[in-house]
Amino acid sequence: MFELRPFRRNQDITYNPFKAMEDFEKRFFEDPFTGFFETGDIAEFKTDISDKGDSYLLEADLPGFEKKDIHLDISGDVLTINAERHSEHEDKDKKSNYIRLERSYGQYSRQFDITGIDAKAIKAKYENGVLKLTMPKKQQQLPESHTLEIE
Image (cartoon, rainbow, N blue to C red; front, side, top):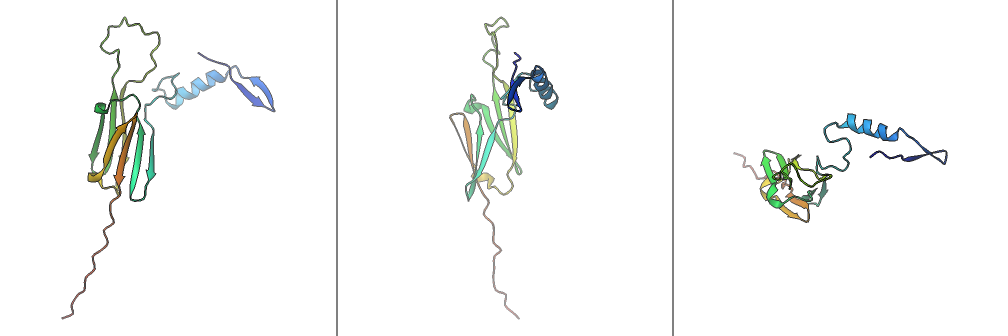
């Protein structure tokens, strides 16, 4: 479970026998609720947002989810992405054959401010574990100009 990792000091390789405990303590105090030995957990799924000129493209990594378990909600200027993954062994009895279970199960949620986005024109697509949202920018309304007659 714990491993010794080399670290370099003055080009000599030495081993720090306390490195594993230091890493454990650091993870524990940074976020004690995500698990002590878990890395790469999707407690908060990763997203990329790119500017495509007239729209934004949001790509959220949601591997292993089924499309029916992903929900998008818009309330005011807030977009919420909810995803829920169910455990395959939830319905099985407690005497399962699992020796180790590392997959994450539960509900995951992120919220995004969509001020400046045309919310009614957002398009969503889920393919190969990636949710893609095309979010068109609102068109700036230029003030109308007109001529006034002098009386």
